[in-house]
Image (cartoon, rainbow, N blue to C red; front, side, top):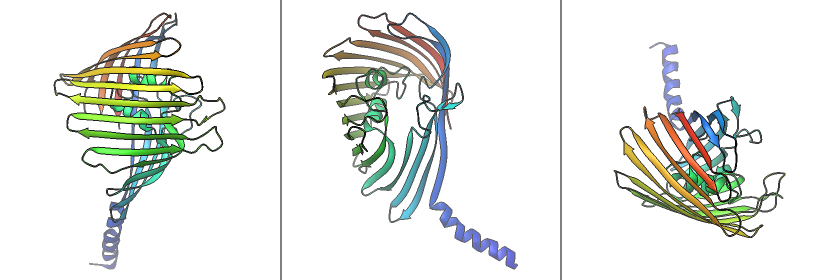
Length: 326
């Protein structure tokens, strides 16, 4: 073996363990659809091509470094994407890494801690226990909790610290706080989740007092109970949330129920939800559709929704689209 070959072999031996100790992964999802929509209370029907009707399009990078002794350092950088127009963010007001931007430590023995911008535990419970997942376009649960003026605060909190326990026989718990930093007050949340076999449940408490922008945000408090059971031939979902607007002194009772039925290589999805406020108009939303998987990473879907606010003309939406994960 000549000197150059020997040197190359030594470098390969020393570099191998270092490369094995850390990794960076690029990933994301693109969701595009065509359809028509008429908002509740509106007389205008809009025909459009849209990004993110079933899942908000996004891209991201995650990294893990093995620090030894079962301890690892992590980071996440994730940005939303409007693929229909080739723009970043869910809107022009989003920061570039609005979905996630955090660094942390994780251990199988004591759990994980992440600092920065983190997805809220209320959002995770909401999307994990309804038939339409994280669909802002078609999930009654997401629509009622996050876009109906019942709960304030985004699906992610900036300036936050999130602690999650290790998985203990299917149970995990978390504690979450977002520093106020002179913006009205801090946000706090706590949750417990149990998933074992076909059964799953989650309980979440959340307080929002941080304004987070130039426009003042109402203080809100919410309790959320979520459950699901997979019978194989059908998976059932149920959710209840009690959201209090502490600024306006209005209480909202939110009820959600859904099913996912395997049919062929896809699933028939259906979900019903309603909001019962202590003051103001109630809301009822139905969504039905079919989601067909061409592969583990690619699916096509057709969805229809009826959305009614008491005293206003009903709204109706329909979309056919495609999602690809990478």
